Image 1 (cartoon, rainbow, N blue to C red):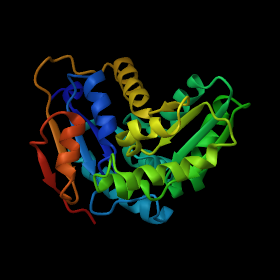
Image 2 (tube, one colour):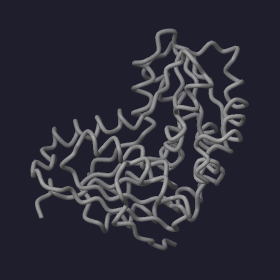
Image 3 (cartoon, helix red, strand yellow):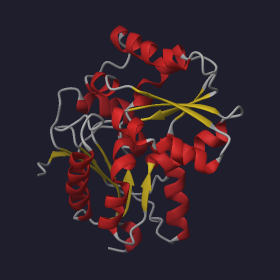
Image 4 (cartoon, rainbow, N blue to C red):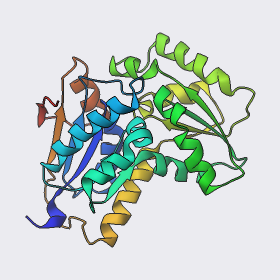
Length: 268
């Protein structure tokens, strides 16, 4: 197999990384994709740095065995605390992460420089988004809010539920006096409730880093002459560490395709 025909590896703690997969499918329709969602151990956002690094290493080693040519960290929590460890494992392989892509998009979107970030507790505590955004534009003011309840609600499939709506409303209330004009969805699960978020914070631009990440992948692979130019039916493989009752339904609804190649893999 030619290097360009190898798959793009994508991983996340659960179903949220499928937002990045969808963006990759749309931007790079010829590319083969291998996805791993650690659904047995989600959420990552409340776990320690050491645990997240350990889990990430297990997933990366598994994906490297799947004959991939590049890797996408489709989990903000992992990108915030374990990116360097992932890059050490992958050597010269191109590695992409949603935090840098999200920071680029946020700086491009804001006009006032007042940017909100909603994310898991671990991502917020890492201050990764604030550092990334302020490194790109020093006069930006970043306000972060941890939302630990959202991932479990989304994993449960409560995407348009009154409990989820009230939870979102409570979290977003922290931005009321900040006058932000841009809100970064700092967890790849959150785009699954984007319509609900839009309803609750009108007039604010929502930044979903999935599209920006897919664009970064496309540009880098083109520069490295690694784009798959063969126009054939792409191979999409999905691996999870458990299959919750709602995972297939949520995944198929969000990707608008059946998850035919869905397998359980036990890691660790």
